[in-house]
Image (cartoon, rainbow over all chains, first blue to last red; front, top):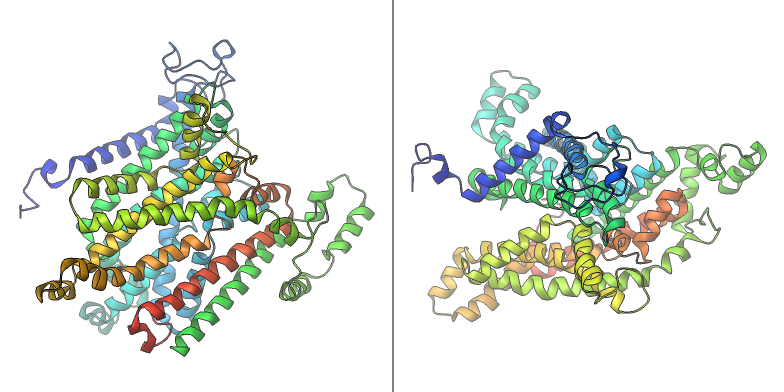
Length: 279
Length: 310
């Protein structure tokens, strides 16, 4: 086996994963610098160039039927979709891990309650839950992030609970407890760093699912609301023009596919490297 | 074994009760349905009459108890839009949805299982790599994108198949393919890793070392053991038969339960949404329960095991 620490980067990391990482970096840069990158405003119309095909002089990805620049809208959509996916993934990781730790620490009734909630979450397809909540509570970006933030928490909770129970049986957790550390300190400073790699792997596996979920909701017209736009919105809108201007739909669709593919590839690779037990 | 089953059934009932509570909380506390249905300009007496008719003037805990009681009696309310029983509205859509989801499930099983098993048995072969690539693609391509691309190719460009509607069996082809392909890929990937896991076990090596033909090792030892995790995911797929086509039905304007749900949510038709939520939950719980029973049957270790421990 090659010594992992001295081998050059390209030999340690498969090219596909490097390519995926590159794509993710590009997407992140686009999201961060959207205002500087987008040549036109989100709603700026160019009525002289409606439904212009890709390759037009001013609009290299074409325009929609109001003459809005597809590339500019794509840039802002990437920002919103990534913002939601990142916010939601972080939130569900925090909520899930916290609940998992609580279950591991108190056991008994608390543990049963957490497991029952996890069962409940797993019992309903999340899309159905989300549909009901969104349409009935109205719709705003913070609510959408919070709702998506409930997606997948039960996976972190199960993992965190199992690993924390296993960890408390090991010497190091017992040792710091004997030294008088508070439970919060034991869980956050000692157990969390030891199980972090498994949790991070789970996050990279949940992240693409959140992107797909949000774009699905937005596609149905029940996610991100106009005038804001997300990748799913663009596909939903482009669907109306599928026979006359398929590029309106294809550009965001391809972005969704490549981004979920890239993050999944990185996630699979990390899982194989860091935590083969999750396979 | 009996205790194992009892705990599972108990959990299933608790889950259903939680779903009922969830539906109630979300759908009732999110706003005043009377104002939204009748509009803010409606005369107060009309709104009051509406509230009375739907029990919305009762205290909230009272509504909750009544709601629970009504559900126990199979009374799921009437659609606030056209006054028909919600359950009837939903029931008449079920055949259309099943007409898509059952063939799609068969497609998933027919492609996913053999592909996954073959890929695991021929690890590293060209077919294995093809299965893995297809599996990744099946996961990363959202169903609405796949559906729209199929429409673009087969309806718009080639003109072979209709792009939406439910007039004939030809209308069902594209939605079924859309639903089935993604699921087949997921199932293939899952079956492959379950098989690989089992094939790496010492008892497989022992079995082949003592001279049992490889084919018999696979059918007698590997497949039954790999079946246990695979049954879980198949159970999940069976559980989504009713509601697994929300997005695809929308793409293809297919008048099934999923379309009904999207429209009902947009119209704030509480009774219909509640009815679908409960129906979906009941299907999921029932199929999970069946999976648990099958576990007890497939895995002899579980029969004596302590119930409920994960």
